[in-house]
Image (cartoon, rainbow over all chains, first blue to last red; front, side):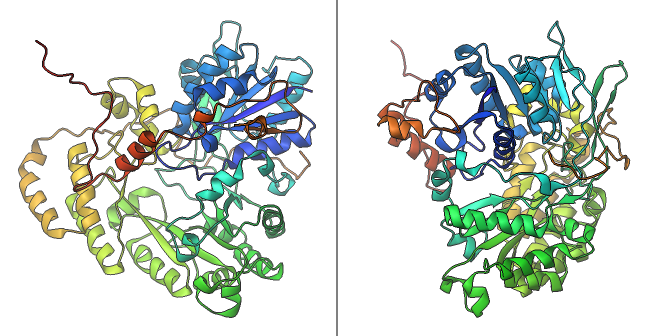
Length: 526
Length: 62
């Protein structure tokens, strides 16, 4: 069997390691189940640098070195692959995840050391690729869901790999391969009192994807949204659609997983990295979250503070949890159940309170939803975390004012994110020409610049410049309507003369229709 | 740092040929680097930071 080295790149270099690599450890779990020889190096946790990465690459004769992550790991992956190729030139290099799925042709062109890209969902493709490598068969032209190189080194995409039908067939992530104590040191966060007290927090996943079509978001094939089709030049490339294959793990799968995490690692907080709990709950006919909450309590995971009806700072045991919600889909009855079971906070992507912006966002919410949802959530006992964003294409002084007024009304303090066109999102394809213009034609520089949207990269606002947006961010953070009024007065005349940085355009890569990508017809073991 | 700690850098289901050895100084970042990161993340008001190295100006010549 092939010897496989999996490397987790650095995510958010500016902050301490706290994002546990879920996808990569899940794939490690699959490889282990198939009997492969697997080693895992977590550079995100260790942060040991180039010299140690080189030592890791020399630790054995690796048949395969696999790496992957979100687009924001591009810089780290680029650096690691340079070392990998120098130290272990014979290894077959595989890359996967959002970084390559969103733009396979570009990534394979920039990172020439990648031998094979796994595009979209890897649960079936990854073991299939490893089996072929075991057989010394490196012809991937018939393998679904990959980007291989032809004899000249050109990247060639194969057809899309169908999503698996049943997520419960997946093994649990191979957490044993991670230096979890490093992550546990950074367990505490400020999203709720319970999270503030967390000592052994771990990331878990209850579902994949989301039913909504927010223009800033991306799913990259994990939710039936990706096609591979020929472009105008007759070359196959990825296209993203409004198609949605909604899938969630059963409450039994999730609760059993958390029980194992308690038994093995004594975790006290489970952070669900799901895109949106509530769309899954709707898809289940409003049963999923209630069943999950009931089972959480029945299996003894409920925090004692919730059981005894005392403040959380008097908690003596059990597992708190947190996740993501949605302003128009959350229901009081469900939130009450979730609170009882130990849910401590829910992120609400409020984004804006302006009706025009919300209408154009594809999120399915109105200003009324955004005003009511945080209050209803707070009344249940769960702390809402209402995310705010500025710099939308339609952003105006009026929309900023509306958002500040609503923030004051609801008691929200936020330093807003900047609207960012991440690869794979509708915004990215709509504004790709504008992005290129802002980066002097250097798309790779834009990708390397991407972070967590707390800084400006490419502007997609039709009305505001980077300097204006930076100022507006501070004004929103201070909720200072006086400064906003003065700024608007000063800029009114200048705005009429300004040429927008961002101009929308259609793109081959974005199909604004509900075209469903394939999903397997029946559940089957991997 | 001993080999035991170094071996934990790589985790898997078999013993590798060359266990990874890490020099002691690689264990954690130097204090000035730790300070730099924390300071840059806290900039604001009187919290300012000046680079210890990488200055673009090296003084008037001559």
